Amino acid sequence: MSNIEGIVDALELKIEKVLKNQTVLKETNLKLSKAQEQYQSTIKRQELEIIAWKEKYDTLKMANTILGSDDDKRETKLKINALIREIDHCIGQLSE
Image 1 (cartoon, rainbow, N blue to C red):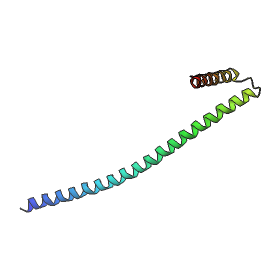
Image 2: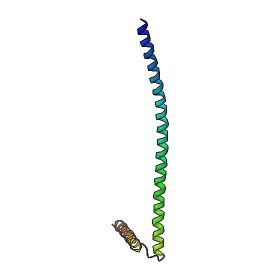
Image 3: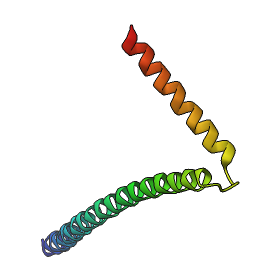
Image 4: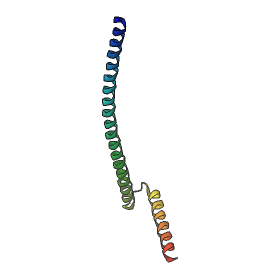
């Protein structure tokens, strides 16, 4: 009988260790999930900042071209033509 009691005691100890490990792993998982959420929000914020900076850069390039810079003149002309086409399309829709 003492042999069975020893086996049961050893099994109980192993189960306790597994449960403690499970608790530690759950806590670690929760911490990692929170960190991941923070990183994802940081990434989204930075992506929005990048988009805003790209728009500012494009506006600055266009302004430099209009002011007489020889760089990117073709690109600016294309953008102006696209804007004119959009305006013509809007006017066409309003007149219908």
